[in-house]
Length: 285
Image (cartoon, rainbow, N blue to C red):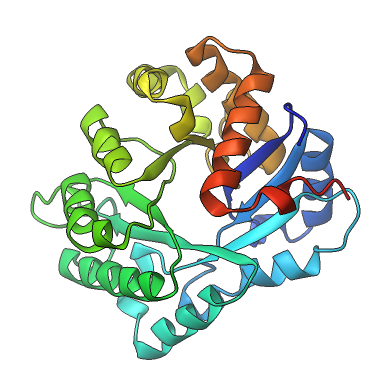
């Protein structure tokens, strides 16, 4: 795969904000050098988490279109909706060849309307069990806040649950849209995780995050958009899209003192190595 081609490791391609122009979004991604996308399969809740897989299949043979892989998982904001039927549906999705990870899953203590801490943690553990049985890595969402949990710490809880319930699997995962502290990154690396950075890395207020990113090993890094959210500078506040992952990669390259092409090559190699997708990522179609 040419060194200047990128993979967007986390994009909500099934989001309704792309309904009117999804193919144009994919065309712009291809033109920007994006050759792979991990389409995140959380949908609008458990009933629609299949939509990312549907898109991977719908665009599989479309020329000049990035390779699309899918994930499947239940976001912590939807934890109260989870029953055995939802877990069975997740298990079935994780068995599909286009699905390469379980997620995004984890904990979100930011909004007071989110499910209680104990519900989120129970569903997180159950999804880890399903993913482990299918030998799939996990994509972690962790958003701290004081809205729920009476002082509970989302990062402390997330890492404690991973260390207790996930470490024994040896499967690793990705901390998506990392916003934590150096200690959180260190513990995640010790668990075999990659650290993914999104467009917020480019924001003026993100100097502490950039310092953490600068210190991490190149072999541990991924880049993402989390589109349609978190558009990087200079389009902050607008709808994000996969083509913009080039800006985050360029900022990350600057932090590490390498050329953007080098960061593109490194993060693509990291993705391919971790998810065993080297053959698919290199498909020029």
